[in-house]
Length: 120
Image (cartoon, rainbow, N blue to C red; front, side, top):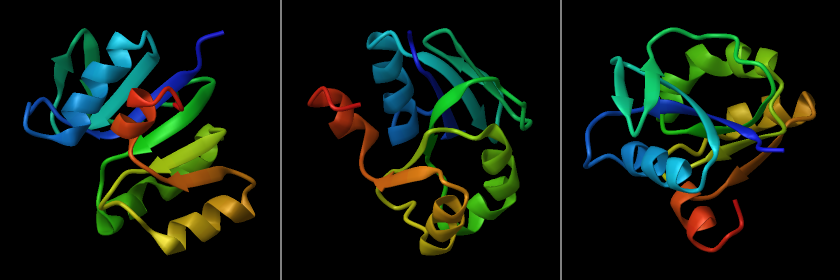
């Protein structure tokens, strides 16, 4: 079964890591949903601007700084993902504690590295 991934902080700008991650996730045949500040499409993945209640999200990939994550705390908790990946620059001890207390795993890692070494 293909696990669903939600990228929060998605971008249509090719110089952004979130953009490259979307491309690589598509190449790896992952089932992807995306939320960003601006609507757009990257490799066939629609970037939504509103918080949609996607079903069966396995992994949330964060590409937002600590301050911008706060408005997503409750949303992510309601999605009940198996794990949240804090990509470089998104580390957030406060949110990590909230996730732990809600039995949601997290890791400080880089999605691009995890994909490149087959550990995603």
